[in-house]
Amino acid sequence: MNVQPNSMEARDKAYHLHSYTNARALEKDGALVMDRGEGIYVYDTNGKQYIEGMAGLWSVGVGFGENRLVEAAAKQMAKLPYYHTFTARAHGPSIELAEKLIQMAPVPMSKAYFTNSGSEANDTAVKMVWYRSNALGKPEKKKIISRIKGYHGVTVASASLTGLPNNHRSFDLPIAGVFHTSCPHYRAFKLEGEDEAAFVARCVKELEDLIIKEGPETVAAFIGEPVMGAGGVIVPPAGYWDAIQKILKKYDILLIADEVICGFGRTGNMFGTTTYEMQPDIMTLSKQISSSYQPISALLINENVYQPLADESAKIGTFGHGVTAAGHPVASAVALENIAIIEERDLVGNVKALAPKFQGRIKALESHPLVIEGRGVGLIGAIELKPRDGFAAGQLGSKLFSIMVEKGLISRAIGDSLAFCPPMIITEAQVDTIFDTVEASLDVLQKQLS
Ligand code: PLP
Image (tube, rainbow, N blue to C red; front, side, top):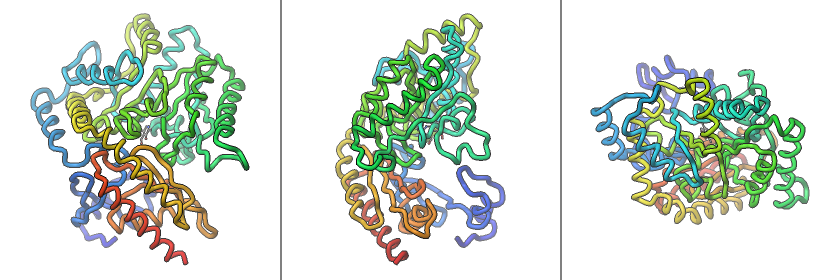
């Protein structure tokens, strides 16, 4: 990248430490600086247009430049720019949003609780689970089971839940009491000759073995994304969630559905919980709740969680948890308007209608010599590149990512998988443009390799 002195790129290099970035490489190469967005497109500081094939971070569901959200924010900012929900205070937007979320919930839920990020929501879920076990007089029931390749965030507890090595390495994580069971990626982890049903049975047995080894009376909850996102878009095989839930019921273990990516339409239903017939006790929501126009996240908890928690707060005198900006009035107002847009424009219907085209084009890429698998559901998917001698894991993925960026398409490289999760307002023609670009980029990569 040709970085001009005093440009945004140069100042970024000078002053800004980035998330999920090799800091030394950034010192040399600089960042891609975005300037504005419109619909499914973003534009960098040189005016170059990109399709945001990841909707930012799996999140800008209604697309960029949605004026209704700008107006909702401005209106609330002028009326009551801040108030909190500590010590029995409230404000209109947080009340309305809590009510709306409980009404929308795909399974009976009792209360909504607000936080600011997916990580905070999952950290809060862990604390609620511990608090509940103490309330129930089961102080030994505290362990939480997550999955290899699951992604639940980066704060101390949620990074521990995350099952990816780079979230643990050199951070001294995971914390005690968090365990990771098998990842339900059939193609990657099946044994020789093992069919899908046998693979599911093995995943479930590995979970049950872990519960028995740890002692069922010590295991409090299991957390999972309906579809794993940041682990590489891993769609569970048929029957997986049903069989997992039977084990959880058998041992009285709560289910936390991390809907941070799946929530608000991504899988073709409003929630991934519906797509996979899950019955969670806790749901964590973020990202598409506000299309990320404002930072906000929420937990929905059922009676089974709320009642003991309420009892414990009465015993202690308070539920001693909460962050300053939780349920922020501007963020809540934007979330309410965002959900109204998703409903009025039937964006979930758009996901459902375009899913066959989107998934069909991903699957068709399996015939490309560089691709080992295309997978996904709704409007989320990934292609995975075949391993190749002489290339370390992730090297080809990052090469393909760069070629696509050059061609004006932003995806996300996860090792040698490239993920796609465009804004839910996308049209059929735009889906074709994405995958025409992916095809052309694969051909460029193949030429480079030959
Ligand atoms: N859970 C899931 C499923 C996610 O994909 C993410 C972020 O990508 C998180 C939790 C963490 O959310 P945040 O980055 O807002 O902390």
